[in-house]
Image (cartoon, rainbow, N blue to C red):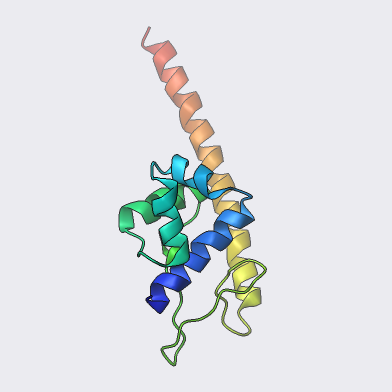
Length: 128
């Protein structure tokens, strides 16, 4: 079993668990059989780009989240038991800052989507 595949599988599982979802729920949401999804989590098979994109959309995160970090020595970084995050020593503060920025950007996008919807409604009214 490939260590990179295993690391990615651990990461996918940790994210699924963090979202309190069952394997069959994720598999159904990304249009995959539960047994094939289980193979990804176990590291028996690698994750394809289309599947990473579907998972990223489901969990509202960047697809690169599923790519395991490799340490400077070339060894696989292990997912911590609490959440599966790959964090370099001392990087916890940077990670927290980035998470806060992501939340702000997501809210900004939601606001812009609402503005676009309102403008589209006004345009539709004007075209009548």
